[in-house]
Each structure stands twice: as structure tokens, then as C-alpha cells.
Image (cartoon, rainbow, N blue to C red; front, side, top):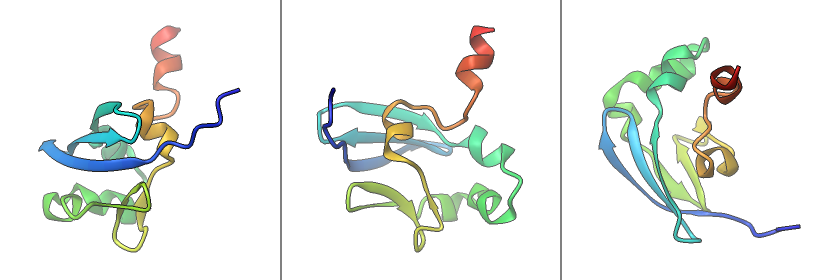
Length: 93
């Protein structure tokens, strides 16, 4: 069983709501956050559709966060580029 802990080490904005995230095992992911943000029902999450607010992300203790952890994601979801749950299952069906 692999028990390695993965951390994000950098994040760079590469387009509208898209980030390139580098992890400490030299893996990188290009993640489009727009589908997640646009489908969110909660207004506090949808508020990050404001480009200036979205651009306020940072890496803190190996996590990608916005605000005072107002918005953050499980690191494994970022690592696997699977923000929208069920989308892979729906594509396979």
C-alpha cells in the first residue's frame, strides 16, 4: 500500500479559471475549475467566478486555498484532476 503524502508546491494561472498545479512528486495537472464553480449551488462558491477573486489563490501547507480556506479541495482530487464527482462515471456509462 502506497502511503506517500502528496503536496502541491506551486500553482500558476494558465487561462480563464484554469491552473497548472505542480506536486512534490514532479507530477503536474492542468485543471479547469469553471465547471465546478459554474455548477455550484452555494453563492459563496459561485462568488469565485469573479476573475479577480479566483486569481487570489495561494499554496499553503501543500494545499491550494482561497481566502481563509473559504475554498479548498482535497489534494487527491487535484492530483487526479477530478473536481466534479461522477463525471468520469457518467462518461463511462
